[in-house]
Image (cartoon, rainbow, N blue to C red; front, side, top):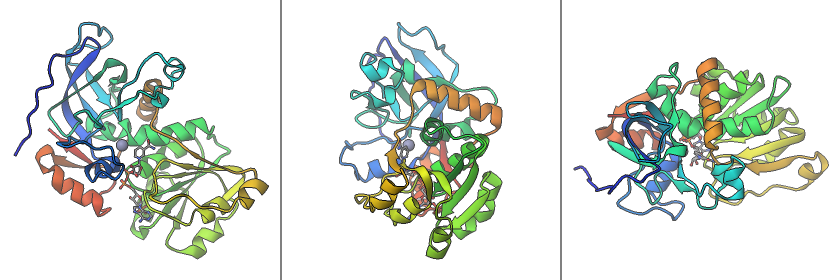
Length: 319
Ligand code: NAP
Ligand code: ZN
């Protein structure tokens, strides 16, 4: 059964995209089950979109019909607040999400404000580029904002859609990369993605061995962990940055944070200008999502596979 809706007249600043590919981000699964209490049904998930511009509103001059473009988690912002004018549109209080109270990308077409519709560099194949629009930017941004460079030692928790791109970007930034995973079977691939070290996070002994070795840890998991162990894994001045959201409050002892000048932070997606930068870096340095493709009509099958943590490493729906 398919669901049809009338999107109405195209707004002057809007772009309509004919979707060719849409990645399945774990946030779609959270929205499907209304884990965050913000979903509205009928609901069309999808916010890792690549396609061609099918129509542009009368005020849009920067994009042309037929051009290959991408759209991520964010579809609009006020354009006028302090954060928008500082180029940090992802922090705008009026930000609109592509598939929250809007119709997302598990579809034929999607619409967004043109400022959030980003041209895809030629070197990137659409299927490998789609996951960059959410998973890619979400991990690129904290690496960039925390100044990761060849002297850095970076840990990535969880090798899923976000994590497998985080390993690649951290490697491109020149860091020594440690992957933390509950899946021993991912060790070899973690190394081929660019991880120098692999730690089985189910083994508390292995976790304790990395104490005091990392400058930045990016956590992409959506499950509760012993966060104290990861704080212990930081060097002085190091940061534990959440991009995945665990269900329970994060409880840690303040002592190692205080004594080592360590911090805990979080990071949401990225701005349109960062998206352009991230895509350019991916194109020039060969960062791409490792994907499994499914026809759009098999979305439910793909979602089940994501739920079971069986996808290596991003499911992408195709039209
Ligand atoms: P994903 O592809 O399902 O990957 C998550 C990975 O976490 C899994 O592959 C697994 O890696 C690990 N994991 C799963 N269950 C676990 C458990 N019980 N304990 C420990 N590790 C576990 O998900 P994703 O698409 O990367 O998204 C990850 C999270 O980021 C989601 O919560 C999503 O909502 C969030 N997110 C946030 C933003 C943002 O702007 N901050 C943007 C996009 C997504 P291993 O097999 O290696 O252990
Ligand atoms: Zn996402």
